[in-house]
Each structure stands twice: as C-alpha cells, then as structure tokens.
Image (cartoon, rainbow, N blue to C red; front, side):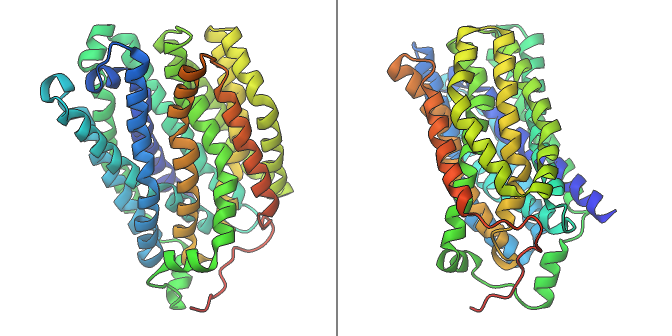
Length: 426
C-alpha cells in the first residue's frame, strides 16, 4: 500500500510538473507571435526556443538548491515545494501581457517565468527519481522507478492533448490571439492537486534510516562534488542521449514539422500523442528488463541503436512529410527513448549513497538536460537554418549517443545489489 501511494503521489505530481514545463514548447508558435514578433517566422521561433532554453539554465541551480534541501530535510518536503513553484510560474505565463501591449517588458517577464519553471524542474526530477527508487524493494528498482518516467509520458500526453484540442476547436486567429493562454492556466489549476497528493505520503524508508543514524549532513552538494566526481560525471554522461532524443523528437518536432514540412499543427500534436503512448507503455517494460539483465546492457543497446538510427529517422519524415511519416518517426524514436528512460532513475540513483543521492543525481541529470536537452530545440532549429538541411539535427543525436555509450561503460552495475547507503566519513 505504501509503495502504491508513493507511486501515485510522485507519478501524478510528476505528470503535472512535466505538463507545465513542456506546454511552453508546444505553444512555441503562438508565443513567438505574441512575445517575439518578426517578419521571419523562423527567427521568431528561434527566439522562443532560446527562451525555452533559458528555463534549462535554471535547472542546475534548482538541482543544487532543492536537491540540497531534499537531502537535508527529506524528499517529500522538497517535492511539495517544487510543484507549488511550477504551478505559479506556469499560471503567470497565461496571464502575461504581450509585446504589443507592454513592449520589451513582456518577453522579459516571460523569461522570468520560464526561469521559475526551470528552477522548480531542476529539483523535481531528481527528487521524484530518488523517491521511487528508495521506496522500491530489491530487484524491482528499475520497474518501480520507471513509473516516474511513465508519468513524464502522461505529462507529455496531457500537453499534446490540450494542444491538439486548442488547435482543433479554435480558429487560428482566436488561438493565436488568446486561446493559447488556456493551456498555461490549466497547468496552474493542476498544481493544488499535486500538492495535496504529496502532502499525504510518508517519507522514504532510506531517508528515514539515514536520519535515525544521524547521517544527514549540512552540505550534501559539497560532499558530492568533492568525493563523488566520477559518479557525477558518469551520471551526466548516461543521461545525455535520452535528453537529446526527448527534446528533439518529441519537443522540437511539432514546431519543426509545422514550420519546415508544412504539416498542420493538429496533426503534429496527434503524432506526438501517439509517441507518448508508445513511451508510456514501453518505459515500465524496459525498467523491468533492466532488473533482469542489468542497466548497462539496456543502455549500451539503446546507444548503439540511436547512433545508427538517428539519420534514417530524420530521412523518413523528410522524405514522407505527412502524418504517416511523422507518426512513424516519432513512434520509433519513442522506442529508443523508453530504452533509456525505463532504467534511467535506477541507474542514476544506484551511483550515489543516500545522504547525497537527491543532490547528486539532480546535478548530474540537470546538467545533461540543460546542455543536451534544453539547447537541443534551439541547436536543431539553428542547424536547419544555417545549413538549409532538414536532416542536420540527426548528427547531433548521433554524437550524444556515442557519449552516452562511453559513459555507460564506466557506470556501476547494481541492478541486483542493495542501494548504496553506507556511511561516508566527513
């Protein structure tokens, strides 16, 4: 019962959090018109994705601040904080005046809201990952923690469903004028639901044991950086390709397909929803597989497939610029993504002891998603604009796959071992 409650509170909260964070990318086109007006649609889109990336630069800050708080005062307390911050930042975007009303102050305020979202998410992902891994029984950490990733798929599905409904039932003029605001206001309304769920779940057994043994320390971030540099670097490396695939194929693609391939917005959101379903189903499967065969074999296979398959996936959608081509491309990319993300929470958590786990995995993943995820839509759009080659982003994915492959070779394999909870002398 305790595990089910933990999965429910953590998973639904994560779903709401991811919805709030991703809806910005799906509303990129109307946001570009409202806050970055330009005669060149691609230039406005680049400005919007640059602001999208700003949120990611705050993720490492949130990882340090909220991660440290979670290692000192508990995972639950930190996760209650993150969902409130995210709801406030998202709701504010839905109420902001546009450039036409407030001039340059409007995009500045948009950036501030995006920074608040990034700060919150920087502490959310690592906390949710540590929370479920620490609740999971031995031999099921990959499967149990994969529900955190399944919850991100639900957040993606919710974001795409809302985007699809808004673009389908509103005329383009109405949607671009004010209809997009409803997507952000919905994210604000969801916040109290996640807050309620998280305040009604117990702290993790691992943290309670650490507190009882007086192993909670004042400076978990300092200890992680000073004594766990290699695991931090490994955690950063194994996260790279998953971040790139997620933010290129599932976040960048809807706007890319609209602008470059002239595919209708409603079709792109429908395609992304299909890929989200694939991810939702396969992430727990891959988590369970990693419990049986180990984390590293799954990651190595995913990296090899990603390196070889990135270019053909882009070629597929460019050569078949239709709903069928887009759905096939995003669905196949989701298969690769689930191979990474099913075991991701487990492999990261297993690299660090309890007293620094929240901080350490938040920092390692936060840096990876900032550099290789948050910048991915901007880099991809820039590569397409600079080279006039719509296949150019595929090479970015191939490079990240190679980096993750190398990092995985150095990761500790602890799928069948207890979580590291040993005392660390300070």
